[in-house]
Length: 360
Image (cartoon, rainbow, N blue to C red; front, top):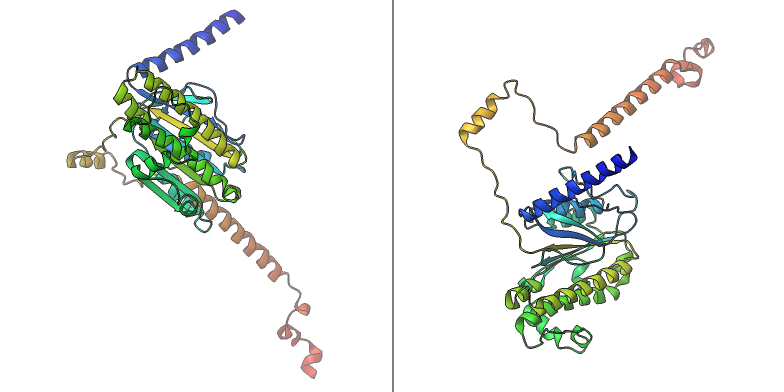
């Protein structure tokens, strides 16, 4: 019986793996979501559960202790320590490859659509507006940068334009002096674009190391980086070329080093994530309803029922409930004490009823 149970469990595991593989072959899974470093307060379970691409920002929000509008029924994220949240979340998006051989827990991405961490950044601004946390969103190849709070002071010397990135590569402290290029060339624009993105990773960790006190404050920090240099290398040389293989290995080593540096700068209290996607699918179009469909929906609700409560209902309900209970108890205690009050200990009004005071 035990052998049959083990065979049944193995069969179910093989069946789940076959379903995941079939889904990825069919094009449903279009990338990989990897956790390079994470503190003990954040729990990521080992498994092959696909994560929807549009819910990756919700994973980042939940790991930082923020609430989301919709529940995330994804078993990859466990319940960690609610009283010790990470001080930083670093998310690096790599375009041009489905997966990277990085160290850590990895999950396939289902429906890899473009996403943004703007909702997480807005939550940080709302809750920690007075402490001015570090928020950095950067896409070097597109010259797209967004810095708020203390990031303006820390990363003011960071190269963000293509000309600045090219000039930074040929300085004395550039990574070209220590990085093995192998088949990559310093004279090719595509190779320089790829190397400039790695230079940005190095400069972010270097600039933050000069301001270590920012990693020890009470406000969480957010870093969102998008790298597309590897995708351009694949288009230029082909994915089977030696240049693409060397670039992939250099990128993996640089990401692992960057993850270790950021994790150590925050004292082991940071989450470093990598999203590898060959290409993003087109965003899902918003469904519209016709007038006929709206009228049919109205007929299905003849009792004019109220709309469903949102996720803040439980919070508001508890506030109102315990406030009413507290007020009711206060009224009962005050009424009881007033009813049993001794007139001898009260004001002159009750004492004037004394016969001696009346004679006087």
